[in-house]
Length: 109
Image (cartoon, rainbow, N blue to C red; front, side):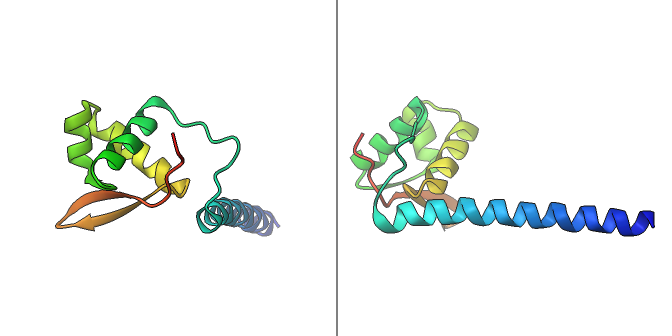
């Protein structure tokens, strides 16, 4: 009886996790496809600086260069670029083993 209860709880937790992940993905895909940004988009200073930097570099730069040129710690750049990717603003690609951030939607800041 206890094993069945535990199995039901695990299945329910997995189902909720899958639904939340799908909703997050759909929300970011919708914005990326329509070119619209959420009205509640609140970028922090690092994220805005990274967007401006990418714009000044023709739309792409390596994360290590962003960190060095802006004086932002590498882990902060890494987190900020990942958030910008979730928002559909940048795309991250690997080039020769290094992360390159490419501006794909300009929020006009």
